[in-house]
Image (cartoon, rainbow, N blue to C red; front, top):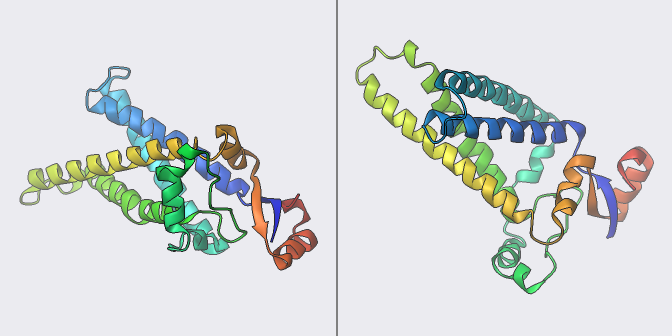
Amino acid sequence: MHTRLVMIYSRFERFWHWTQMALIMLLMVTGFGLHGTHGLLSFETAVTLHTVAALLLMILWLFAIFWHLTTGTWRHYLPTTKGLFAVIRFYAYGNLKGERHPYRKAYWRKHNPPQAMTYLSLKLLMFPAIWISGLAYLLYPLWDDISGAATVLSVVAVAHLVAAFAILLFVIIHLYLLTLGGPLLAHVKPMVTGFDRVDLSPEEEAYLERDEPGHIR
């Protein structure tokens, strides 16, 4: 295996990542404002911004789902236990002893096992939960005349809040993990330039140099 700089984050993936981050941050700020945590925005302004950001994020997710399915990049999120406990051990205390991160990116496996499982749960559980509960909340005037609508709305509100805090927890852990296994900028740079160090088989290296010369350095 040879280690080369390879473009593993396409332009769309980087656009999706940073745009999603900005929209989620806006949703968190406006969401906390709607709950009275701060008074930076008026209630009406917070509602408008929260709704617009949520709709834009859902549109972005739809494009991302289509992109993952059509490009085959969904394979990066397939869960595996190979190397799982070694990475968990590194996150738990190996990094505190100055150990090297046990996982090296591969051409078709850029996420380590815990990352793949976390991202998969994010896409299959947390995002759909906040998406469905948010739409139910937004469209409440269309179903407020059903029996027990107020009770159902309370359940929807709690589900939306729980999903939001789960995503907030993911963001906090994600930011913390960026500080492990090397300088922070070294982890952020690939999501800016698209290039990261990847272990390539001779066949993969030959393919990239022959058919995708702009994607390998």
